Image 1 (spheres, helix red, strand yellow):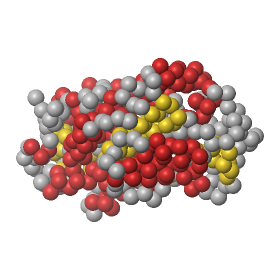
Image 2: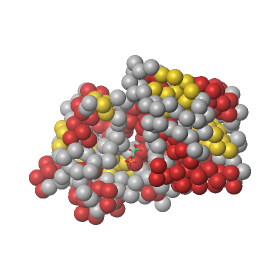
Image 3: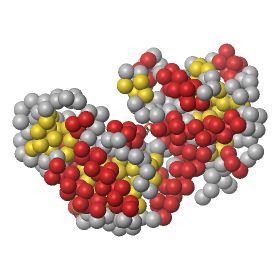
Image 4: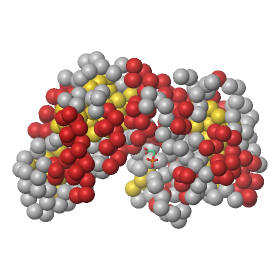
Length: 398
Ligand code: 3PG
């Protein structure tokens, strides 16, 4: 499977609609990790160097309505302008006739960044009218949003039907690296899964259970599994209504004769802050007023031992609340163990916005892993479906 890449076509002096994934973490309107923006700069610069003009579009978060100011791309427009040292014109994404006229008259070298494309009702429904409107603004469509390419949305998928379409440099890089990864899966395979909600991980575990030897579970996700084993979790986050799901996953893993490891000790605290007092505990009964915020030292050691013995390791979702200093240890040690494993010949892959941010918070250099993907869900679906995800399939060379 080969992609139609921007490098295979002499794209010069064109109006380009460029879909990127600028879905970066923000705190008080400030970007806390700009990796995804920086990763798309090579494509942006390449297209600008060839005298093209750019209409850039992205989503941010999962807005419930178009007035969700917390999810505006305005701070990202500023950041992009700073990184490019070029003016970036920020424009609403409503695509009424005025906006379309303005975009159709874009001048060579100009850069527009549209407001959060998910403020538009049709985006997630892959609405034909929206896809056509987007297409009407440009001569060519370029998808560099690997992290969104598992979505059948208008600005990723629908628009391809109406414009000559190509893969950007980041999309191509992810495609090449992940395909290499798929070709190299050697046992034992260890999958470290963190994050908070079990719902988003069920399909993942189901589809990887045949190919994975060890599942190491951390984060809020682990609490739901622990609750199913009758742990008393005090104030810890867990999903009461998903305990049956946790039980189902545990028996699925056992039926397939694979291993699931849950943390057996924990870092607990009364509140989430950088200066809170913490305890390491291994009790089944978390004291009142306390919550679990990270895996404990014994569990961290056990997880790292398993990583050491593995030949393929995938990490998606931090195992603690890494936004706060006292709860980074588990994630940090896992990342360091993965680097060591890479040195000893294992293939290692990390991915997902939260994991990228955790890497930065734990002050770990991105060098020394086999691949760091900008995609979370996209990376996992890519692995699961051997690359056949919607936004990529439509860019395959016929
Ligand atoms: C991600 O962060 O994984 C991508 O930006 C996709 O976001 P989504 O899961 O809201 O579609």
